[in-house]
Image (cartoon, rainbow, N blue to C red; front, side):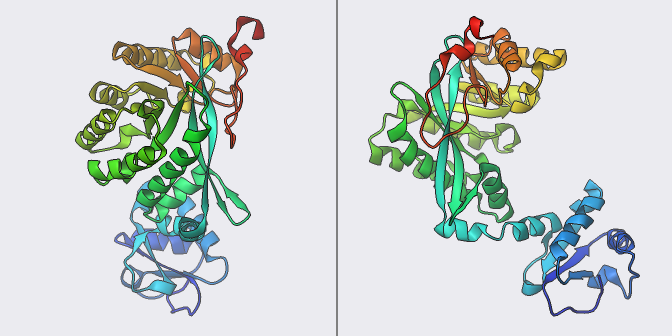
Length: 341
């Protein structure tokens, strides 16, 4: 790191807290030269992104929050949080994916915990860029880093509906993700969903729009109005990743979903945690009181299935019942029968 201008790739680090920049120089064992509070620090040359990654990791959360960066190749741009710039650098393939990549939904069964039959399938997004397959978490993280959630959410939902509805087994429901962070307004949410359904001539009642992490959405009025409008078209609504905290209960009471999905963080190892079992039981009772079925996400072991079934959970989803596949797979009903224990 040096204050001299470098004719190579890298970033200029800036902060309104000079102590952060001095700490970075100290970590690098390189003396400061000049007023770094004004000029910032340059991090350039081969492997600059890996060094930036190490710097960010060494800072506290509060220090990271006030560290900004500008790419040397584009010094006319505005500074962005250093973590965001790093994420964009590590996912520099994403703009090309949005332009030329292929969305490929995989379908994971959601199973009735009483009879083992498939209630529906969730369309989980995968991507192909050339010969490279991209996982859903990679795609979402890249969309966040590049401020492209709206484009990604629209394309993902389009692929889920266009590919999933024709493949959906008779009598089942297709769960399609909808990220509230990508909702500009209620009308845009409708425009990016229902023309596709109409073109396919699909039964709206076989579609369940799954609102991702509703607890983190600050505009609850927008969320309420959006849910109401989708319901008017005949869709069912699910709330995803419910944590069991006060915000979960607030979302349940405000939106009154048809389906409430318990975050997999609560599912994992729940048979070893009396506290989590009590939390899930309260969430299940609240959802049932409001007329919603409850899905346990991330069920991977028979003990997790048993615990959730004992707590009154209606449906289960996870590797225990089946992995996401390009075509909906058959479900083994013996997985929930007592003799399969």
